Image (cartoon, rainbow, N blue to C red; front, side, top):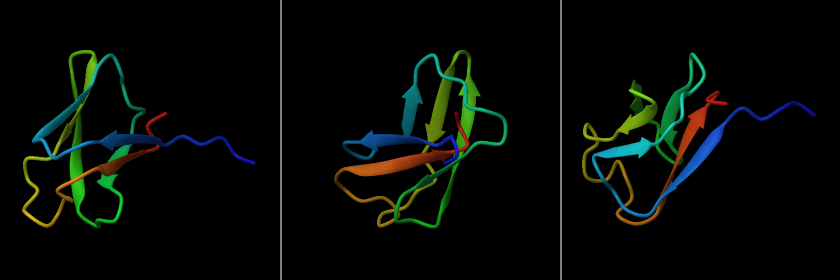
Length: 74
């Protein structure tokens, strides 16, 4: 059984930016919302990891709880 290198973030409601404090994703990590095919921007800001959802449109993100998968982040 292989080592899982993905990180899952449970988000209670839409916001334009999600910040994971003191976390640096591994090189090549990608982000997406589970259930959506749209890619989202993952970037480093100081010691934090920032998930930019500002480019999403109504219907791209559920209005309630949703999950962001950071593939290969660990």
